[in-house]
Image (tube, rainbow, N blue to C red; front, side, top):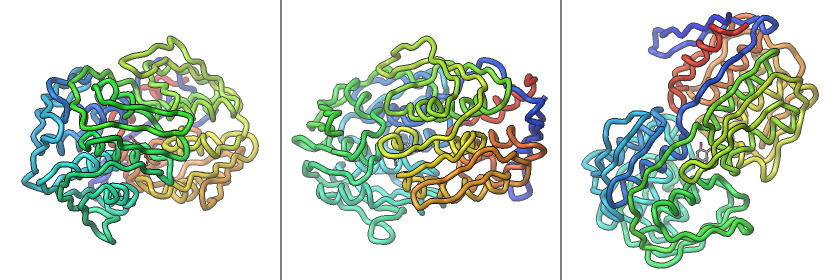
Length: 450
Ligand code: S3P
């Protein structure tokens, strides 16, 4: 039994309290995780700008895709009530988004803002104003604003157009070949989405391959797209009218990662996570855990609507330290907080490098994980572009904080199961950005734990 209590605090946040004796707890069972966040955003956006009907099965009902759906509804797309079974979108066609009468609010969602910006910049004679929450208004937008400006876009914002709120006056844009200095699927997708509405070939080359969900889905919706995996380049030739499709969203490997690590570090655990997307550009977490010696099996490998899917079985086993760096980093960028928890329980010193991008996510994930895991008793040092974590010190329960970052909240909850005593995680409601059922699943596993 693993007591887990969620309570509301006076300042309207939620505190998650987990009391654990790791020698007495083990996690068993078969679970499912909600739909992939990246694929959910893209399905909503492409559905909104395609001609005809798009059906989405398995949509993530987290706060982030809800922000995307709200923005595109404001611009004229007809999106049925969001649910995980079946969402229907009547798209309005390429270049047909309407000028919204009010601000577009992306909430906490960087993917909504950056991808949407590419689409909006190419919508002639329409004006858009975009904002988001405290975290979004701190995150760098120059990485998408600058290439769009090279294409002729008119975008204004705080600090020379690099911070939201942003204002966009849609313009006819010119095609470019953009060499991105960072491997970012948001940058790549922003430019490709702009390119849909530009006559001629628009190309993005990135230094390492980032997630390719946009490429797969754009092709399925009928865009003229060529990919060169050797040079990490993608070209879209516009204008291309998209046609509505059925999208079946697999479970999010970034959400499965919490259970993969929980199963690997809690003695006696044996978990199966069903229906997880295992796109090669996303499975760095499996590669890293396998390097650490984790016992993970991929079962029932199959392809569903253009994305590879598998059931993942994880069993407890002693972990060894490893090094994560280079081209591996874009494949596991969102999983580094939970991999830091795995490293704190592994033998030896794990080094994570080339991950400076973590500093500009929903929080500065390098600093936050170093601070909060230290409070739990881990030996962890901040590097400019990563973390150094020496495993093996026993963790002990204490008060920690999510910094309103969903992946930090959930990583700390898994660390709390491995910690002796009571851990309280403040502002734990952040988890609902990508995984609204996280606490419920944790409670179910906790109630049946041996
Ligand atoms: C995402 C891309 C990644 C990732 C984010 C989702 C996407 O960001 O961290 O959670 O859906 O395209 P970057 O493109 O900034 O690396």
